[in-house]
Length: 304
Image (cartoon, rainbow, N blue to C red; front, side, top):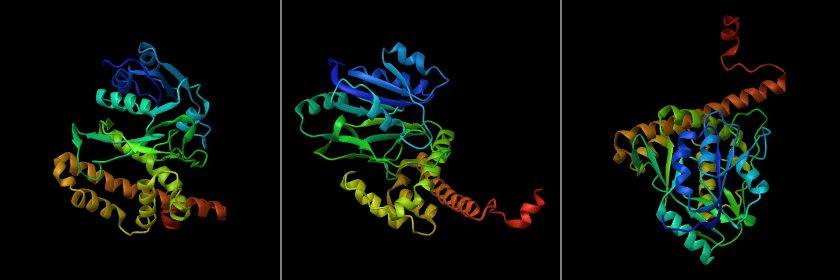
């Protein structure tokens, strides 16, 4: 790339992402400052970060709040006004880097939404509702923070903001070029990540149902949150999710990977509902002082 170092500070949140970092960090060579914010990785993450001459910072989650991205935004000594958030499984292609440099220098907005190209089982998912996945990832540091959505101690939802949105008051635009996103290189990785995501969804279930939608997350995100309030009250959500993704959003056109992806999305909806139920039982058990047992007393007695 012919770009000189661009006055942008990049945050890359990681844990055991050595393999992804070998692809992610070279694609950030244009950025003047890159912080790799780690959660005590046990793989070769530190060595790879050092090899690329970037700064490694350790983050230790207290179990509730703040999570990694907000902690980074509040703590790191950024040299630049503009912040770009890039996950280790994402790649900033040269065209996107050039657009970031040009449009931040022009100061035409206070933040920019980026779209992502999702890759799954060796091909780009172009339908299934994943053709567009806009997130506010590039913004002026002083103006943006992720939603504050604490979790219960020991909830095991992960220490990084995965579904929280950036709240920003200011001018917002969209970038034309897209991030390459390799989120789920294997089905096992999909299942592992979505187990944590489902735990987080169960933690936030009542919030999504009853709390007002923040007006600082952008109009499209506000609309989705209002729709989520309706969606969470629907019966048979796994079937609804599969029908929506595979039929209405044309996941059928993504071939066998599309079918597998939509079935996994339906499984995720089942897991979310199951974990909401599990959480409710645990709360009822805590209120009565008795351990919750969804199998009932008869099966509980046979297990002794």
